[in-house]
Every structure is written in C-alpha cells, then in structure tokens.
Amino acid sequence: MSLVGEAMLPEGRSGSTGSPPTGAPSGRTVAIVGGGLAGIAAAVRLVEAGHRPIVIETRRKLGGRATSFVDPRTDELIDNCQHVLMGCCTNLVDLYERLGVLGEIRWDRTINWANAPSAPDRMTPGWLPCPGHFSGSFLRMRLLSLADKIAVARAMWRLIRMGRAGRLAWRDRSFRAFLDQMRQPASTIERFWEPVVISACNLSVERVCAEAAMQVFQEGFLGSRWASAMGVAQVPLIDLYDPATALIAARGGEIRLGLSAKAIAFDGTRVTGVVTDEGTVEAAAVIAAVPPDRLDRLLSVALRRADRRLEALDRFEFSPILGVHLRFSGTILDVPHLVLPGRATQWLFAKGVDEQGRQHIHAVISGADAWMELDEAAIVERVLADIRACLPGAENLRPVTWRTVKEKRATFALLPGIDALRPPPAPCFAPGPGVANLFLAGDWCATGWPATMEGAVRSGYAAAGALCGSEATVPDLPMAPLARLLGLRR
Image (tube, rainbow, N blue to C red; front, top):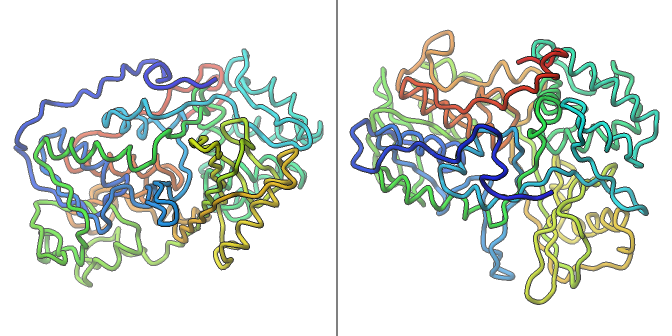
C-alpha cells in the first residue's frame, strides 16, 4: 500500500507546522557551519524562534552528503545515493512538514525480499497487534527455512523483553556477539539480519555496535505499527531542501552557498564567529554542523583545549556507501524496491520510467569498503551479477547508461564503544570545561540514533533547542500497548 502526505502521518499529527509569522528577527545572530540536514534543521528552528541564522556552506547546494547533482554525461539531476526515511523518523518527517515537502514522499508498508526464481517475498503488517504485526507475512516467507524463522523469533523475543535498558548493556560489543548468543545460524544472519543492519547502520553485523543494531529492530519494527513504513522521495533530494532557502530568508536569516569556513573564531572565553575565505562572519553563537574531521580542521589549539567535547574528534572512523544508477531499455523491476539478501548489492530502487521507456534503477551498497578501489566498469559488472541472480529473466540484461557515485566518508562508523565519544549539543550537558556559545550538530553527535538522516535532523533540532533554552526535538512514536506490556519500554 502506498499513500502520500498527510493521510500517512502518524496518529496525532495535524500537518500544521506551528511556525510564527514572518518578520525581522529579534534574537541573536547565529553562524551555522554546514548546510547539510543538521544545519538546515537548526536554521529552520532558529528562525522560527526569532533568531537570525547565517548558514555557511562550502558547496553551492544544500544537503551535504544527502543531496543531488547534475550528471555531466546525461545532464540529468540524480541523487548521490538513495536515502530512505521510516515512520519512526519523527524529526525528519517534522522537518519535511515544516518545509512543505512531505507530500513528495511515497510511503510503503511492504518490504520486498528477492527470492529468485520465485516472486519476491513480501513482509507487510497484518491484523495482529504490534509487535506481532509482521508475524503472518514473516511465516509465509519462502526465503527463510523453518529453522531460520524459529531462530529469528527467538532473537526478536529477546529484543522485546530486554527493552532499552537491556540494549544499553551491549553498546561495547558487536551485534554479531548478540546473534551468536542467540544461536543464529549463518544462513539466518546472511539472509535476514545482515541486509537490515548494514542498510540501517552502514556497517556489517560483525562490526556494528550491538546497541545501535538492536535499536533498529526495537524502534523500527517492534515498537509501533507505523515505525517500519518506508518513505522514498519522488523528487531529487535537492528539491526537498530548496524551500528552506526561502523560509529562512523570509524570517531574516541567510544561506551563503559557495562560502568556505576556515576557522571558528575564539577569544579565549567565547566563540565570536566564523572566519571564511571572504572574511569573518561575526555571531553571538556558532553551531558547528559538520563531520568531526571537518570540525577538527576549524579549531585552534586554544579552542580545542577549552571544550572537552572536542577532545576525541580524531577517534571517529567512517564507512562508505556506493550508489549505482542504471537505466534499462525496458522495465525490469515491477516493485518499488527490492532487498537482495545474501548479495553484496543490498537494495534496488525503481526510480521511474522516462519518456523513452527506460527504467531508472538505483542500486545501493552500504558498508562498501571493498568496492571503493574498483573502477566503474568493475562495479557495474558486479551489480549486474547481483541483479541477474535475483531477478528472474534478467540473465541477458544490459543497462543503456550507468553512473556510479562513491561516498567514501558517507557516515561515521558506529563501532562498539563509540557512543561514549559522541558529544552533546552544548557543554552544559557534558562534564568538564566547555565554551558556552558553541553548539555541535551532526549525525555523529549524541543523538541516541545511528548515522542516519533522522539522527542529523535530531542533532540540528537539539542544538537549536540548547541555544534557545527549550526542547526542540520531536517525540518518538508512542510505543504500542502490547509491546510496552511485554517489556519494550524506553
């Protein structure tokens, strides 16, 4: 089932942004370094609170690592990678609602799993109450054996019973350790756990922090019927962010594209602005909404020593994502998306058919370290091999055009133990010294979420809220009564 817009909002959401009237800002000037989702989210909430944000973005477009570009080969606007939101992404949904673009998202309740040569298996919510709402379709999946299903059910029951408190005890161990403790067969890990985890966390079950992977299942599949709904933009990603420019400008803020930040100015006590290649942008506060390695290059020795949150920036590692755009002369995929279990290519997304009858397929490889040194021809051949293995009748398929997009530092790596290093938005939430008017944002910060667009928006909202002295993040979806009764509490 696919519906769009307000009809698919979770119960209790009215579709109203509650934004104040436009007008000249009466609050402080705030420099925001970075025009990705975290920077956009922070700027939107600040102008709504009456402040004057100035967004400084090196690129000439918004969106950061989740944006679009014009392919010089075809002059077509394509996304650098396929980004998906879920029903549990309450803050990202809220931002799209504030920007007036929520209607551009197509929602699907069904997850399609390749099972060649048969038709895809369909995981879709049934009539049972959450967390048992997937039970019927899961039991009907031909991809998994009865032993696989029993193993998954055993692990899911443990995830329900442990709740949030139980998963926190696993933050220093890998998710593979949990799966081994739950006696998960290798076939179950390969066909079920790995495709979900690597897509959500951008790391394999062998490497990812167990607590983060557990959260994906607890809050994305077991806590609410709506949580697993999958939303995909029906327009290029950049079109989702363009309204932010007008919204921020209408309230007195600015977005300065193509402007490179060189340093965060610091007088020994407070930050005073951002030094750029065109001079200093003076500000009463600064929000750094860039990745940790980029932030590290903006800091003086004195500033780094003055704020404990900045001590471990060099300890963050990164994980790549590879997107492959393929156009075929006819329709090869008749579902909106397809999971490819057991294959190096994890997902295929059907992006539409053009006027010439060519179907655009976007293939996604997360945790793509092994692919980064391959040339484009080798990448395309590997992806085609996965497509042919999973789509009946695709043995002789060849794309008419292709384009590979490597994001070598797509997300920070959610390794065991890294949560202890993720900084809060303001020093008042952290022990030790801090700079009172320096705020941090980005999916790598202490959002309580994996490295996702939702985490980025949460961080931007949290930074704006900390600056304004109010709560700005949007609450999670309500936990289903039965799930809560069984022990799945936050």
